[in-house]
Image (spheres, rainbow, N blue to C red):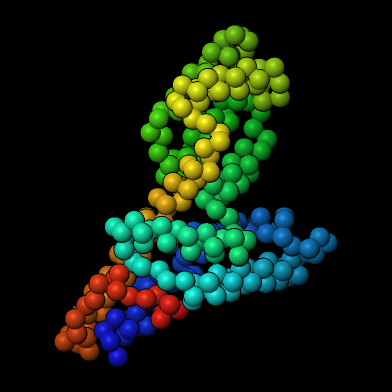
Length: 240
């Protein structure tokens, strides 16, 4: 048996489909409980429904990953693009969240009940930082400046149920978008760029974990005479 096959079949560190689903497409259990489970079910019945739904998504994703070729080469743009394409297919077929959808869901759940605009913006900032998203354009600072301008005009903190005040803030945000050249019609392009960044980061992690697994096994006596292979030469489908 080849060195790569012996290592990857034995190693528990391999970045398997379970990891891909857990890290890339996880949907909070609360979401399943509220949206997916049949109405009227409680306790064990609800948990069973959630389990079966997750199992179905997992099996769908596994079936796709057994067919599609993934090259573990984060430095190759074509490999990154192919990986992103495969994961998009997984999301669509298994009905899983994309990164932007997960962010939207997080924003929705975290900001429910927040009464004022300032706390809302601070919460968005916290979400961005926790998600590891960079604010390279300095949008947040401009948004807070816009909020301060509106609050000075109305002479009080801006509440989210103040329709007139929120309209003023929205108008200020539109000015910021225009100044920075941000067009709502370009959102699909921005989302695609984000997914490619995520794909590259995940391939880098996959490569690291694969190399770590092979190096750990190579220290064992049974592998001492075998030569390690390049991660990009491996076919993940052989180990699923």
